Image 1 (cartoon, rainbow, N blue to C red):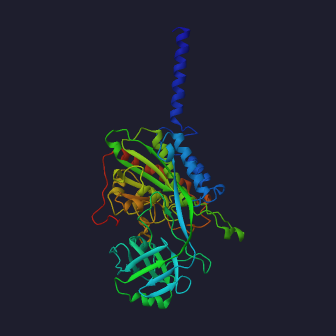
Image 2 (image 1 turned 120 degrees about the horizontal axis):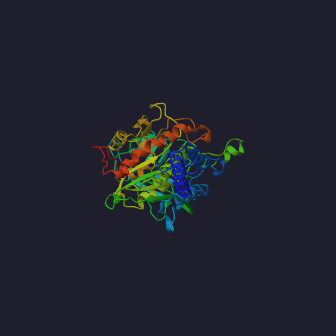
Image 3 (image 1 turned 90 degrees about the vertical axis):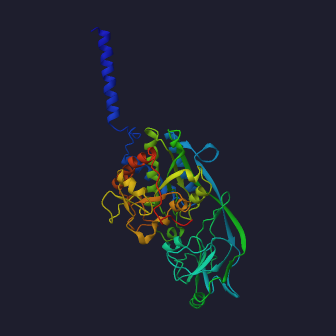
Length: 465
């Protein structure tokens, strides 16, 4: 062998060794092409999204906007296609919130009751509401525009009464109202470009005598709630949206939607004044879910292009009424009838003691054949162990489920005491559990994005629209 050939042969050998070494260990700055998800990457995203510098990502605040811009920058670096406004990844959603000039008045027949006196209006979906008394029977849908009289509006009943315009409850039946005595109620925001028909019922707490009288009302009795609007406050919230278009010309019409909500509760000035922790970091709720979708987006983008299209979405203002996901569902970037399935990721940062280790649960597991099929394909998914909490209706997935999309939420929330508290911080996150949880969903999602399987609601389990 000539000296030149020996040199060339040695160079080829060294090059092959270098390539083998590169392919056998993770690149410290990126995921490997096989989609390996590293705990260091999960932690890095968490340190930004749930760090004090971003101030709790309050719904509709500049901090939420910064979080969405962070997500957008990641998507661009991975080559995910933009689906936001003006060729970018961000959707800017204009919001209007009317403010009242005086205490609203409830009229039942000829009787009138004033907020702050006989009644307390805890929530109000519009400045003017009207409906008729209907009898509420658990498990039976009430007519649209109805008004029901029940002792307490629980989370579970709130979901069941989604078509109800007003709930008349006992004085404490609307939950805690965290406002100064005599303060006027807040009216739910509405999006300007896509005002949704899906709203939460207004809840009015009645004093003892008024509640007794309300219980005796006959079905069909007219009820109105009127408030005088002083001004309309305008604001914005933001979504981040990207897409990987499927490689198969026929199957790419099908869409898998992976989503999470990006916002949390911001900061509490009262706690700061008292010298306490005023930042609601929202590490588990829902930086953990947002990071799951980020990690899945990067891992899938780094590998072979899936046959079906995958849309990745991070919704704003979930904590203040699900505004971002309602906007997305009312004005979708792809037709809703093309969305084969939606998996929302919410609170996966800590293990749930009610399920086996390194296991996630799926809300509404018993409602469709999606969860069992994913579990059969290797997903560590089981049925939600907290049916009394009605989690299926308490996350952004419900906006799509009520419109016919097979939509569920992936979680491992074990009802920990840090929920919606300033103590939901990075130090509480089980990064080993969280990383393993995201990894466990990657292969089943890849299977779903390459298969022709289309999930269905089970008989009688499709949620009411």
